[in-house]
Figure 1 (cartoon, rainbow, N blue to C red):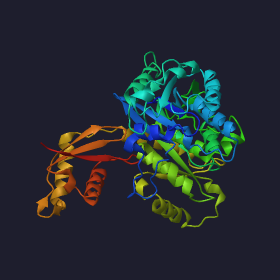
Figure 2 (figure 1 turned 90 degrees about the vertical axis):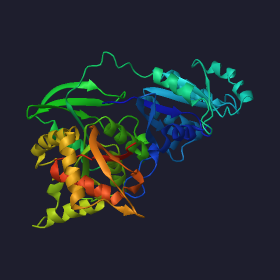
Figure 3 (figure 1 turned 60 degrees about the vertical axis):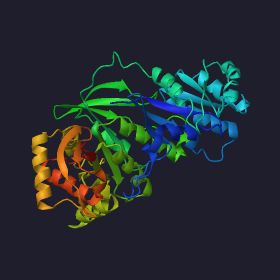
Figure 4 (figure 1 turned 180 degrees about the horizontal axis):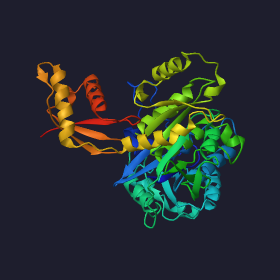
Length: 435
């Protein structure tokens, strides 16, 4: 389920973030009524002609007070490491600058497809000034205007054409999962514990980036693929000091997973960065298991586990569906439960419900708690059907989608969960007007 990745690179003030936002659209908007659910604007999804992809805005990577050219170099190196296709953005108004040449020199060594976007070509006269950019050596330059959306279609056509060829790829039926969380929660220790001598490692396969390795192993007669998330390991303090880069790597791992193990540190408790990463996993629609690591380090009484679980639920209200397991990578406490839990959540994530059974549940729920009435108009639900899996997605055909209050939608979701086991996976309800 890996999707191709585009990195948007270039010197400052050429409009990288404008192009990023234009392509991503409202996919990167913050969901204000769900506390803790945000998307870091450095990473988002886009879609063009049925092709879904992820995008990296290197302009959003804060390298601190590094010198100007060194900062550009570091951002370009991030793109080289992460992207399948690189969009190199320059500005028609300033022409080719020394900084553009610096980025070009780095990209020559990238061994990745590069598409050249000449931004700020807002009128026909400026669009005629793109020919000098052939000298950069990346083929046809594409004149665009990120501010007005001009030329983006042609640019995206070229980008999609450069995506890796899907033909010849081996179909992978294993359950793909990743471990995410902020630094020092014990992800590496958990990985090593899960891949101990009691596990049979089948193979190591190249991941979607130059550094990442996805590891396969078998547990309980089921094949799993552990998606690499150890992104901060190549260029030392350059990346160690870049929190947003580590978050971006976690986001990419999430996109390539069926199930996410969201790891918390029992010693340190819950931090804001935990909420940001967990919120992305929820928004991405992945199956989620909350793993509280280092449980052996706490002094406990009969209430400790109960109180900690309540605290987690209060901090992550939107993850009420996610099971919680308290483990220790050091002592292997409860680690044996994880493969079976991952398998169960993956199954729920891909579960389908027959329309007839689903409609019985929906109609019974409406009979128990009638639909809301707004200014004399009552919501009517005519029919429900499941239209997708991973995550399970249901469409409700109604007389007017605007009459569906979020609290009643939540009520219907809870009724579905009461009748069908969707533990560990979000479910999506969509209202459609029945014509």
